[in-house]
Image (cartoon, rainbow, N blue to C red; front, side, top):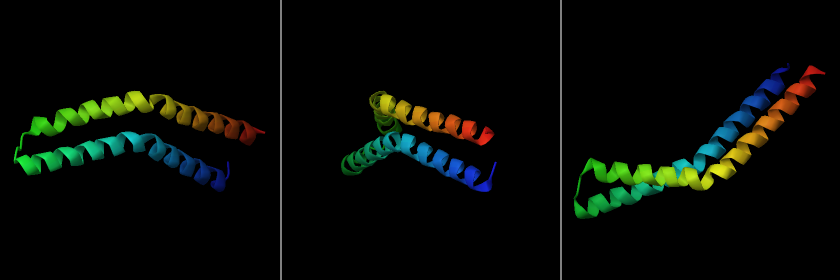
Length: 89
């Protein structure tokens, strides 16, 4: 196991994590900004108003992006197994 292999594996793992988490985090950020804007304009400072729509939006984003996220994770896992197989030779 060489250092370059370990570094490239770590880099690919971090890239996959960021790629898989980005849609859900982006939706959560967008909904949070919209709710904050709504609360600032109406001066309603209820905590439930900001929490419940974010949870619903995150679950919806997971339901929508789940097939794509699974495909990315499967691709990463297949590449990982192929790399281990080539390393064992």
